[in-house]
Each structure stands twice: as C-alpha cells, then as structure tokens.
Length: 447
Image (cartoon, rainbow, N blue to C red):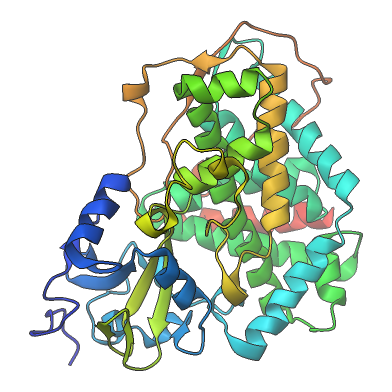
C-alpha cells in the first residue's frame, strides 16, 4: 500500500530542512554547510526529502560517477513509496522522460552524440548573424519607448527565437513557440501541463515537416545521424534542447545585466573597457548561476558520500551555487579577477551529462548582452535595487522582471517582424487546444 508517511529513523527524512517556497541565496547554503557539512538533508516539498550536495568536490564526484548516481528518476524512493504524488508541481522537473537527460551509458552516448554533432554543424557566422539580427528585432520593439522590462521583453524571447531559427523554422513560428515555451515555466501547474503538451505537439509537427522537407537545420541533421532516431526520440530531443537551453540562458542574460546595473564597480570596469562581456558572464556563472541547484541524481545502491549514508533510491540535488562558494576554493567567486576568467565553475555541469549546448548558450548570452549594451549604452535600472524580485524557486535563479529606462532611440530594422500571439488564450480548453494545434500543424506544413 502506498503511503505518504515519512519513514521513521531515516537519516535523510529525520533531519531534512524545508527549503521549498523560498528565495535562496548564499547565506542559506552557508548555514546548511555549517550545520551538516558538504551534504545536507532537505525537504523539497512537504514530506519529500533529498540530499543537497553543497561541496565542490562532492558535486564533481556525483556528476562524474553515473555508475553510482544515475539520472533515471524511476528508481527514486519518494515516488515508489508514494511521497511524491503524480500531481506534484515538481513532477515535471523530476519525472522520467525518454530523452538524453535521463539516459546513462551507451544509450546516453547515442542520444548525446546526435545533439553535439548536429549543433556542431550550425555555421558559426550564420549563428552570430542570426543572434544579432533577432536581438535588433527585439530591441526595435521598445527602443522608442525609453523604458522596458529587459527580462520579459528581451532576454526571455531571444534564446527561443534563436533556437527556432537553427531548427529551420521562420520567425512567425518562433514567436508562437516563445509564447508556449514561456507558459511551460510561468503558468500554474494545470496550464503548464497543457503548455507542455502543446510544446510536444509543436515539435511533432516540426518533425513531420522535416521528414517531408529536410533542410540545413538541426532537426534535419538529427534525422540524418547514424543514431537513427525515431520520431518520438526526435520530438523529445528537440524539446529537451529547447527547454534545457532557453530559460537558463534567458536568466543568464538577465542576471548579468542586473549585476552590471546594480554594482557600480562592475559597471565602471565594463564602461572603461577593463571588462569584456564574456568576462562579466563568467563572473555571473560563478556568483549567480541561473541554475543554482541541478536536479537530480539517484543512488543506484546503498553508498556513502563523504561519510553520509545514502540509501539506494535516494535523490541527490547538486547545489552548484553552494559549491561555487565552497571555502576550499578560496576567493575564486569573490572580488578577485579570477572569477572573470576561471572557467572551473559547474554552471554547465560536469562529467558525461555536461551541457552539450554550452557553446550555443554562450554565444546567445554574449551577443544578446553585447547588442543591448551597444544599442542602449546609457540604460539604468528603473527601480531601486531593493525592489528587484527574485523568483522563489530552488532550481532557477532569476528575476520576475528587470525594468530599465534610457533615452528613447530609433529602430534599426524595417518594421516587418510578426507580432507575438497569445496561443494559450486561444487554446484554453482541451477541444480548442486540439483544434488550435491542428491549425498550427497545417500552418507548419504550408497547407
């Protein structure tokens, strides 16, 4: 019989500290480290416990050892013993999917190779041109207003529109895709579930189109790959690349802009050309990574991590932000110049599951930030720093908004970009959603 009862005498559950529903920062990690050492027991929702790995070396050990710590959440005790319920809002984060993220060993190597090889075929010059062009399109939308939300009106759109281009789809589809993707992250659980299904159907339509009319794009290259992906694998690969890349990259852009606008010394270094955009991004990846806690690995067997007993089926969350503040690293994340150039941070992961789209994400962030600063060099924060609101989510370090103001400017490109739509409003009911995606599929096929 399945029960949500917390096991008595369990070294994990007995001392687990609730961390859900809070804005987490460095002081939280320090308190946990002082109390428990490099591995701390936490609750991620009532009655649901996991180990939070706080130490740098310990994170690396878990990330590089898939033989002991798997990505496959189907062995998680909190699910099998009924404490994590199917309707939990965390299930989209922890629930198993048949894609590269949840695979290990030869199957992971097969799926990962399709992503790495396909992204490597995107011409560097074409990618840079597309990022810059899309950045200019977005900036042109608000530059005459003298004020905007740099997160919601810029950073959140750019990575999705870039991904859509390298998927070989035109920009009108990109704005549609952006609306659905944003809803996956921002909506309430019911609407997010609907949006997730819409996203899967969108990529199903993309796969159908590319089977009929392949081109010089990532979906077509995935199809050509020696791994011989089937349609279901194609859909999940495309969705994972999109969801795994876009929101973290958006908040990397926003967090870097926020750091520049709220730290006078940081901004002065940039203004005097003592600091390049690439170095500013690297410092933020150390100090304020967009993924502060990486979910999750699961112990295959009973084991120990720095003397802490970890049972088979226990979850381990990788505290990347906490690991960057590990005292063993010294001042690498402090005011020293090392945080600008040292790339030993864990923001891209480590081991066989290290982010395969790192180069792409870096380019989007570098050019996206650089183009905004070039077009609007005198921007400033439109609210006091104390009024910036951070999202109370453990797995994403990001603002709710980043309001900026600046002297109005002139658009650079002809006004020919499609206006964003609001497909979720159109597809608010199941029947309407199905009909809406039938229209989208037909639209994608050009019928």
